[in-house]
Amino acid sequence: MGGLKILLGASALAAGGAPALAQDMVLKPIVEARLRYETVDQDGPLPLTSSRDADAVTMRLRAGGELSRGPFAFLAEGEGTLAIDEHYNSGVNGKTLYPLVPDPQTVELNRLQLQYRTKPLVVTLGRQRINLDDQRFVGSVAWRQNEQTFDALRVEYMGIKNLKVDMTYAIAARTIWGIDGGKFGAVNRPTEIEGDDVFLNVSYKTKFGTLTGFAYLIDEDEPVAALLRNSSQTYGARFTGAVPIAPKVKLNYLASYARQSDYSKNPIDYKADYFAAEMAVDVASLRLTGGYELLGADGGAKGVAGGFAFQTPFATLHKFNGWADKFLTTPGSGIQDYYGGIAYTVPKIGTSGPLVASFIYHHFSSDRFSIHYGDEYNAQLALKIDKHLSALVKYADYQRKGISSFAGDADTRKFWAQLDYAL
Image (cartoon, rainbow, N blue to C red; front, side):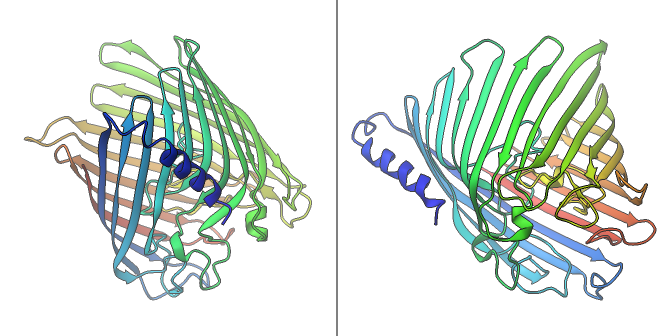
């Protein structure tokens, strides 16, 4: 497959440099494990209505290592997910009578990269993890058991004070759908999405915060209409920062704007806007957050009925627009997400800690036609047990309003309990 080109190149470079790197090497092992239980109770209009709830017990293991000497490092990491209880639709296992839990069984090469790193310059070649800013546009989807990686060349330059230039050229995205991606008619859930993708991110630090400009050019080659629609060009900027306003009180702020349009082979002609604004106040161990996010819609889009909206196909989508994952694809009428949250941190509980309790409320409406999609309530408890082990319980409750207005619109309740181990 096309995605192997970079991997073979990285392996050849590593092998060719082996004699020179034979002395004074440092080996850093990689061992990560996650045991998760997820249940989904979903109802609503056909074909979503089902008498069956999804119950997924999955175990994910990553293992590998990084060999380094001086500025050079070679990393290899495998990843496997086992479905201990597979009473769920993984997206590729054909069990469509159950609600979706996108954690399919898989065994694969997760990362294989050659890296050159110094203080002013980092160059990474091969299959790698890429997280840009808050992962709203490009991320590794680490919430899922099988993460998203890219076959890419990435260059990060930090040779000028307060400035960082981050450039990536990717020829493939390795998706969360694993080695069985595309099976049982799931053609829009491939193992690999080949293309010519460019991610450019330039940031500058000021005393008030960090100003970032970005350009993301997505050119997907897969001959599937649903995937070709993701080919887009997005240009924008964001500003984030924090200032103390009193003893033990800090104000955090974020603002972002982007403009997106069709690109390359996309059969749809459209233009859409993105906007986000958020403020949070930290008072000792308490944080209060309020925000607004818009993924705009183009009602005059050509090549599709009903309009087309701003899309972020390579994002870590679970972080945004509610944990019930109802808006992984932006509806044709767009999304407006008004949200507020509260979080409290207990630094120590005996020898463990911190313990973080959080609650978030979302109000979802459309950009066009004034549709109230629904409301969602999210709650979470996260505990760091010790140096290697952490635990989490999490709940999401999406309550749709009015008539069904997009694919997947259904009352949905999800619960998770998991343990994470990292060496």
